[in-house]
Image 1 (cartoon, rainbow, N blue to C red):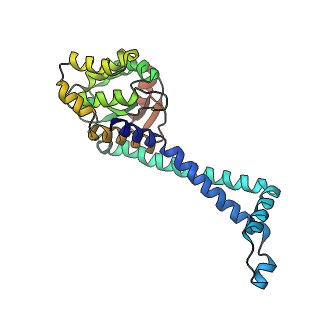
Image 2: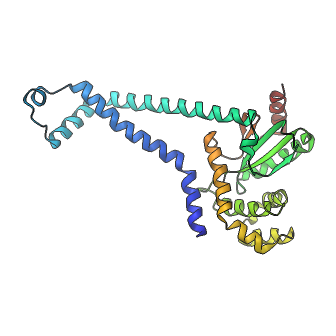
Image 3: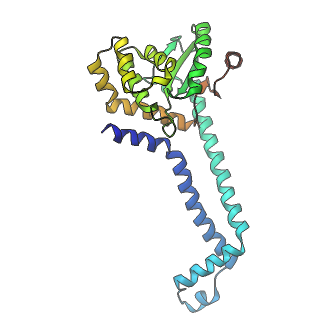
Length: 272
């Protein structure tokens, strides 16, 4: 059962790519058909005599037209790709505006740290097995120690399942710890000893934090844990976040193991 839900998460993480490929295939055939009609025109024999063109003959004609006019096909597909990209970017920007104007709708039930006023909200999309996510924690902690009176840090799960096999199990474990009020302590332990990620380590941390182990195990295997992680992944997809760590501060995006000075610059910008 647990493996089944892991597959669902992997499927969701690949959804955007497959969706675009599907659209590209659809457009490819539409483009070919349109160009064939435009280039070949109506055949007199089929139009005037009412005879039906044999499917094999039509296929040969289409293939020949494609061979004779490859540039037209390529240009049509490229135009479609550009249009899709523009539409996706516009959609991403619209969603990002909501991070600034109505952050509570994006925070949901995610763990938060710092100011409760949500004056400035910093969303972190992260993966517990990502080395860059681990590397940025020091700078992020220093930043929050300095600005926690006016900055709200929000953690969002973005497990990169293709390259990090422990990303989802770790995310589930941290979610279970959150249900007992120990998310940030569990979060710190995962990043501090990233090389130990695995079943034994998840239980070890839970014991060290005096969690109710029976509840911890039940929660991390629950559908609620899966749903919560999926919601975070969906939100990441909606703003075009495909790598980790990825940050959104009052609508401004930045990514990677950023320096403390870079965080300060972005804070100054969104505070204007």
